[in-house]
Image (cartoon, rainbow, N blue to C red; front, side):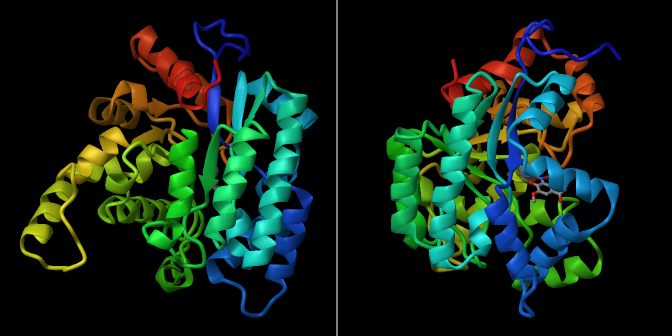
Amino acid sequence: MPELQTGGHQGYLRIATEEAFAPPELIRAYERILDRDDVDPGFESLMGFYLRSKSERAQAVFRRLQDLGAERLADMDARGIDRQVIAVTGPGTQILDRDSGVAMSELINDRLAEACQRHPDRFTGMAACAPQDPAHAAKEIERAVSKLGMRAVVINSHTHGEYLSDPKFWPIFEAAEALDVAIYLHPQTPPRDMVGPMLEAGLDGAIFGFGVETGFHALRIITSGAFDRFPKLQIVLGHMGEALPYWMYRLDYMHNAGVRSNRYPFMKPLKKEKVSNYLRENFYITNSGVAWEPAIRFAQEQIGVDRVLYAMDYPYQCPPEEVGILDAMSLPPQVKKMFFQTNAERLFKLA
Ligand code: 1DF
Ligand code: MN
C-alpha cells in the first residue's frame, strides 16, 4: 500500500466526519457513575471497558479520546486525514443528570472550540447539548454555532431511554433548523429496557446493539412526523445509515399498511407518504466503521451520491488500511471526491 499523505495528492482531501473526543472532566464523571451500584447496564458494559480494561485496545482508545493535540494530529497525518469533524464521544452529556449534563455541555463546547481555534485547518467541531433540558439545549446549540463556530450538533441517541420523537425535545430541532446545521444522531448503548438480552450475548455494543438502537431512534423521528413540522431539518447517520437503507422497501410497505388499517391510532400519515422519502431528503449517511464498497455503492444508489460521506470513527476504529481500501474503490473520480471531500464541505460549510 502506498504511504498515506494529507494534502489532496489523490485528487481529493479526506474529511473524516464522525470522530470522537472526551475531556477529562467527562471521564471523571463517567468514573463516578461507574462507581454507583445502580449504574446503567449498557453504560457499564461500554465505559467500564474503555475506562478500566487493561487490554491494549481499550487503553489506546482511552488515551486517544482525550487528546486534541499532537497525538491526534500525528494519527491523522499517518492516515492521510486532512480534517476531522469532532464530537463528544457517546453517551456524553446524556448519561448525566439534568444539571450536570447542562454544565458538561458548555464545558465540552468550550474545550472543543479552543482546539478548533488552535488547529482551524485540521479540526471542525460539532456542538454538544443536554437534551435533559431542551430549552437550555436549544440555547447552547445557538451559542455553540453562532459564537463558537460549531458546524453541526451531536446527539448520542437516547437520553435516559427517551427519544427525540417526543415533542418535548423539539426545541432542539427548531434550533438546528433555524441555524441551518445538521444533527449527527450518533449511537450509544441501548437503554436498560432494551439492552438485557443483547448484553447476555455480548452484542450490545458497536458490533450490533448501537446500530439497532440508533436506527430505531431515527425511524421513531421519521414516523413521529417531526420532519413534517421541521421540513428543512437534516440528520446524519453513521455506520451506513445504521442499516436503514437496506430496510427501505419493507419500511415503506409496512408503514403504509399500518397507517391505512389504523393499527396504531397515534401513527399518522406522513406528508411525504413514504418513510424512504425522508431518508432520501432529510438524511445524510456516513460510512463510519464500514470500509466496504458494496454497501457504500448501495447507499449512493438509493440515497444519492450527494448524501453519502466519509467517516473513520477515530479513535474506536482507525486502521490506516481502511483508508487505502476506500481510496481504491472503483467509483468515478468525481464521485470519490464528493464522498471524501465536497459533500462534507457543503454539509459542514467548510469551504
Ligand atoms: C465504539 C464505537 C464506541 C463507536 C463509540 O463511542 C463509538 C466502540 C463510545 O467500538 O465501542 O462512537 N462507533 O461509533 O462505532
Ligand atoms: Mn462513533
